[in-house]
Amino acid sequence: MKKLLRRGLPVLALAALPLLASAVPAAANVPAPSIQSVAREVPDAAGASAVRAPVLLFEAIDRLPVAEEHRAGYRRDLYKHWNRGQNAGDGCDTRKEVILAEAAVAPQVAAGCKLTGGSWRSAYDNLVVTDAARLDVDHFVPLAEVYDSEQMPWTAARREAYANDQNSPDTLIAVSAASNRSKADKDPAEWLPSDGTYHCTYAATWVATKLRWDLAVDDAERQALLGLAEDCATTTVVYEPVP
Image (cartoon, rainbow, N blue to C red; front, side, top):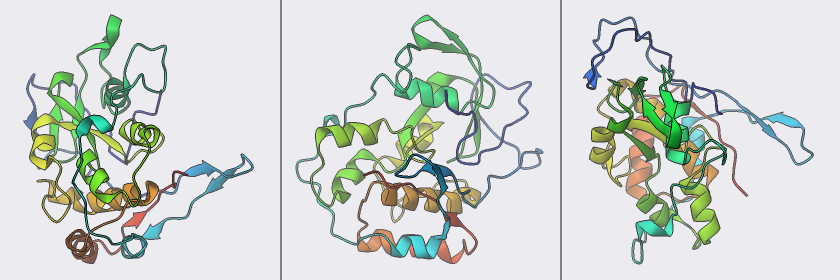
């Protein structure tokens, strides 16, 4: 199973939490998420481990191809999800595996991957969630946005691979259902997380995901990302391209 900590989110000391999602008090001794990405090791062609160097957010944005979006023909079911996940024997689909991987306090797992207890921090709105049913697993770049941004039509297999991608810490994220539904299929020109301290990380993760999957940006999206980068001078991006 993947490590509990993804995307640099801190473990929270959550010994006594309310049953419903609640805002984390500003005075709480909870470290803010890092605004910088961390270089990860990825296998090279020979199977050895290689470090992909981080690049500054401005430079990473410049690597993104710019193209008009194309929504005609989009259907959500073109992107098969959720599949059986990385561990076909654990009884959990991709969604449940992501929720388990991102728990700050691990839930109990019963037959059929039924989850009880546990706690999570929703990065988009800085909420602590104590009920897995109140979580959504968000595709960081929404499926409709992926379709808009494909430079050539993807195969069904590639679309399924994106929709269930657990080989990157960036593609999928567990967040409060309310924040995910507020975001819907909007790009950074149209929506940003309500937690402003997360904006640099959000921009870096958006760019990393688009670079990983060779997705284009439209002009308004690019300008919004460049505007964010002005306030994120030290933020870096790390990504591993999918063939």
